[in-house]
Structures are given as structure tokens and as C-alpha cells.
Image (cartoon, rainbow, N blue to C red):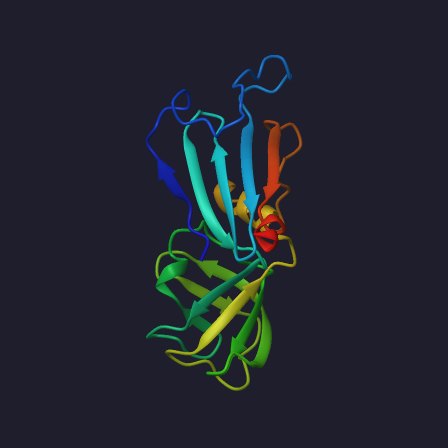
Length: 184
């Protein structure tokens, strides 16, 4: 599950390597900044908020979010305590795929709403077969892992632009360690 992690270091002491920190030369000030490393399994995302605080998250490089149905799952209501930290309706529009014990697809539905308090996902239809406690599922947005990481850190839903009209600018650096490891 992509979960934003906050770091208490000040921006002046916790700059990712290679960052000059001089936003005035580029005309970027007060906006979001991202440093993203796409690996073979995980994508690491570090973000600097407009207020200078640093946040980070790790997502699967496939862009899939894995989960497990918990106690209280019934019908269209999926409960997963790992979904409690995201903003309301963050997962609206994601595809919910119910999986069997071997990871094979059983059914797919679209998420209509998500409520962070209990970690509840509300599906548009009841999955068939019916979801129950201890069943695995996955969520997919259709966007690549770096975009999922950015949305996670910014708390932006699929129906919200990453950069709202008139909003603060966003700048990012993307790197990968996918290929080089194959040469070792």
C-alpha cells in the first residue's frame, strides 16, 4: 500500500542528492518537487511540499496496490485497515480486482467511494464471487507507478489534476535502477 511517510528533517538538510536547492533560477518557488527512482519491484518517491516539508512513499513499480479484505467486509463494502490514511474518495475510479488464493482473478469492479476512517472501499457492484475476510485483492488506477506515487504524496484523486489550474508548480526528477542491475 502506498502510504505517505513524513520526515522531520528541514529541507536544507534533507535535499535529495543532485539538488542545488536554487528554485529562483528555474522560476519554481513554493511548488511541489519530486525525486522518483523506479526499480524492478518498487518505485521510491520523495516529495518536497510547498511548505518545505519532506514526504516519501514506496509503491510497486507495476502501479498495482495490493490488499487483503479484513473483518467487516460484506457485499459491496471492502474493509482494509491499510486504507485509512488516504483522503476521502482517494480510490474512487480505481479498478478493484478480487483474487483467489493463487492470485488468479475472480472478479473486477470499479470503486465508487473510499472512506479512510475504517479503511472502507465501496464498490459499484457486489463482486461475484462475494468478497470475504482474508481474500486478497489489488487496486489499479491505470497510471504508471511514478504518477501513483505523486498522487499518493499529494493526496490527489484520479479525477483531480496533479497541477490544478492556477495551482503551485510541480517539478520532478525521474531515475531508474531497473536495467543496470541486470548487468551485475
